[in-house]
Length: 166
Length: 167
Image 1 (cartoon, each protein chain N blue to C red):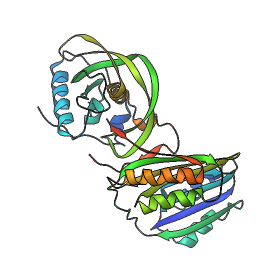
Image 2: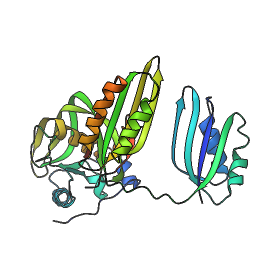
Image 3: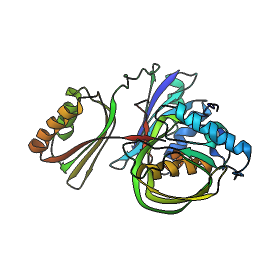
Image 4: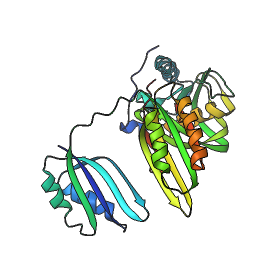
């Protein structure tokens, strides 16, 4: 398991839609393992998408275990080719991102979502979740589609200089 | 060199483009900027870096005859230490003299640093929204002081932590 370097905006890889991947490809499984290590190595990090380690692919990892804003918690989620099939209860919240370390922004996200995807080395999975885990999944799925939180920020004055570093 | 430029005037379509073009032609690089309309007046403040003089910048912006421009050189910015925690302060109520003065004095007395602020008067409703950096442990005392101000000013005040989810 390798901790990979995290790329920062404006690296163009962050703005490209990731290619779908073969969840049974050993390289994909290895990348997913390395992404878990990378996420675990960054303090406070609850999610990481493949473009953030320089790979334009539909693959991300999320783990919100222990987060105070989490309600439903699935533990470690590793998903490939994931998409949102249902979204409701939209709510504004302030987000930051490892790849844009100096800014935060107000972004509306669904408070309840259903996501379908594939588990590397496994089969298809449907994940229904809410609250913080839902926000984290939407943020990572956006990464897989080449979108950053600044693409969804709610207004011209909804970007803030980040003050608290984890 | 780094410069602070303000542009104020009647709002019209194309002011930002005109300002940005004039600066780009001079080779000035816009860094941080903010623009809004205050009671219909166009107001823009920006920082730019360029190897030129205040006079060069003023000359570049002189063709914009319908706005008032100020240019001054600023040193490299040394922000106050950002060790605090971010809070959002909202104040709303019937307009009266001294709301901003009283509220911001309370914030200053708590050693809170205002990092962003907007106020709007619409009809008789006055609204103030501020982003504040507070040192840990000072929020409760400030909230108490603001609760007292709510009564004396007859306004509603809320202070809440601007929680950021790092994803």
